[in-house]
Amino acid sequence: MHFDSVELDSVERSLELDASAEQVWDAVCDPTGWLADSGWLDVRPGGEGRLTDDGVERAVAVDDVEEGIRLVYRWWRPEDGPGRASRVEITVLPMGGSTRLVIRESRPLLAAHAVLRWEVRAACLSMRAMASLSPV
Amino acid sequence: MSVDAGDGVTLAGVNPSLDLVLGALAEPTRRSLFLRLANDGPETATTLAEGLPVSRQAVAKHLQVLAGAGLLRRVRAGREVRFEADPKAMDDAVTWMVDAGAAWDRRLDRLRRSL
Image 1 (spheres, chains in turn blue, purple):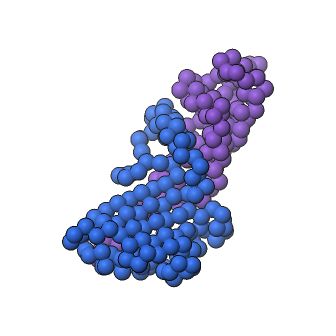
Image 2: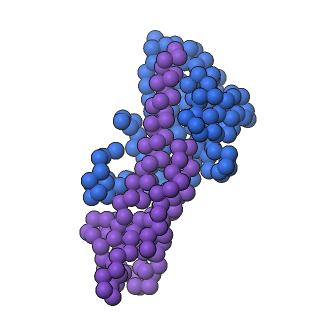
Image 3: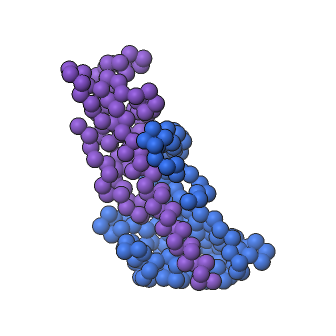
């Protein structure tokens, strides 16, 4: 598995797609085509939605939409409530012919723990080595 | 006694045990205690307190929080109680990241195919 970013409280993916930024944006805005197996999402600031992916249902709240460029939303499992939401930022970058798509999912809870990340990560590696587990 | 932090690991960043782990490690003294046990192996609260500018009682309290988060195990040897770092909790701590990453890989694969 490849990690673009190795932090405990966020996951980042970046990939180049052989399509125009418009095509990628249109695809991004059709959640059931990729983001989830089923459900709906109102892609506009303040919009809401319900998405089920891989058997996990999530409530969605759209925070920000920059048409053609950026979609920011929070999602959470209804049984846990919005207080436990993770934040997803999807960015579409035209690359002259191709398009770069950047996804970042983070847990706002841990925003104050920037310093801690690295120590936890160091501890993780140290402990994983101790436990002879395969490295992440 | 050790607290099982292995349950409740889910895909969407909803992981109470991870909150406990990171909360426990947010305090600098606890962090250094945990890292010392992880690196140097099991020790008693008394031994741990010797090199620190805090009381044995304060160290014991910190160890209790770390144990509560599943980061440490208490190992009894005769009259002595030693604390041992538990790799499982850290493993759980990376689970959210690994699971969320895998979910995005799957979604991005679908997106790529839809274009």
